[in-house]
Length: 125
Image (cartoon, rainbow, N blue to C red; front, top):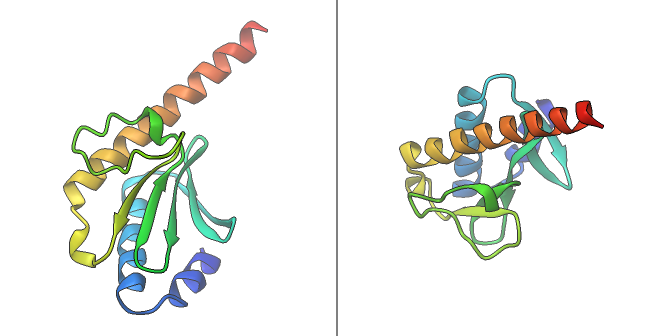
């Protein structure tokens, strides 16, 4: 956790506020989530890699590792990648907590299902 705190502390102004808020929402809403720095970004794992926070030049991306499996019912995911889907935040006010938590909860369910399938495959082999 200390490494992620230091990583976020290096960000300036609104990007740091966005990173702090995203981190708070993830940590408070995903039981037993694992937080670590991978590929120079904070990554969050729950039954596999779940999401990551990626501060960019003009925004902060919240990326979902299995994003292609998310329904994107509320339309907040950027759908131009092969598997990863992103939500781009330019200001702290861009964070719609209700919509974000819907996506986070769906991502958690997907990772749980993927892990169950993997265990079933391992047992049948």
